[in-house]
Image (cartoon, rainbow, N blue to C red; front, side, top):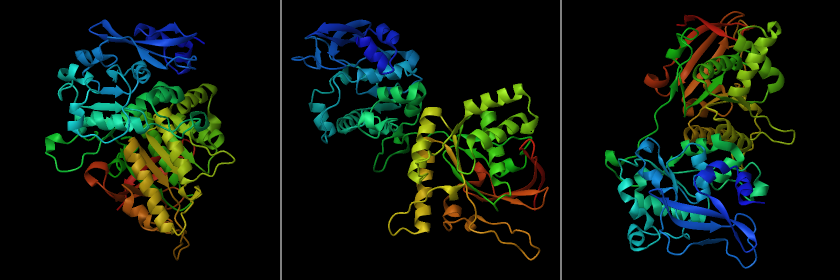
Length: 493
């Protein structure tokens, strides 16, 4: 197998590799990859490596003598046309090639991999020669030119050492690090998580690489700092419900990425239908993708029927072939379904794994869990239901903030109570199994209550930030059973 075939197997674009000067050389009966290092358009060093089996008596890595030790793709740091992109530093040249292939052109690689583990101070680093290559590009690494630096080191001990060293040298306040997604085939990788951007490209494609980089996290900086030294927080991304359909309700509820919302109501009173209508409208208006973890609906039957009717605003049995085709395109492009296999226990851990894959692979921005009660709730020894619920909600909230998605949970109340007239009483967030955690920890809490055959009361009982994501309040609506849309009738008292 040729070197270029081996690059192709790794998901790398061999035409791009050729344009960047990568090639092959014969040595010891095998083909090795040639990696040129360029400065100012001129090759100043060449490295060589065997990608596959190393021929007997040969080294896996070697280089020409007398070459200039510099970053691979160094000229990208000096290119003013790329200043709008964050600077990415990878541990290996092929990881940098994977990033460039995905449009992240301001990516360089360290020249000789990561150092061995071991804590080093700034003074130790200044006295060594491992990072001398940074001195040559220091004028191009100022805070103005590189306010954000993403260190894409490998997910192992040596990679952690490289992350530490570079963040100390470059300033931890402006450095981010990557958390790599879980491997699609852990058995083949020999580990649960991927370790670098090339592996992300192999498992999840270009979109996975971009999403992994976009979700880079700031390195924590301990201590007291001036405001100017603090890293910027990500911008709040806020979406409002459709104005013509939810002109009143949008004062009470806004979809913010990073938030956690809960919907409850008497079973059969429409909380799933309302959540579907609300979030589908937001997703369609803003070209977002929804991930559905629906444990009471079959995606191929229930979801498809309801989403077709919603998209076409027509009962599913009345749809023409062209309407179905258009709806199915929309479903396939903007929806992903988390479906447990026959042998899977849909536990919290199972759900978090699949949510991560949906975000990384399909760029899901909204995740709907429906209903909470149908998950396999595996409590730890000695853990009460209240303690488990608090732990589970904390895990979901951490996920929402880390991955910048909105998570909505639909949860049944523990029991439905009728009044003296035989009508079901409106439940509260406190009536959901798992105690007051649902009220206390939710950013938004919604109750869907059918008052009669025609009217449904939608009540926002909890809102953490009234001025930003809406204030508590009630709106009366009517549900169209054929088109699956709710329509406001009046603001309730």
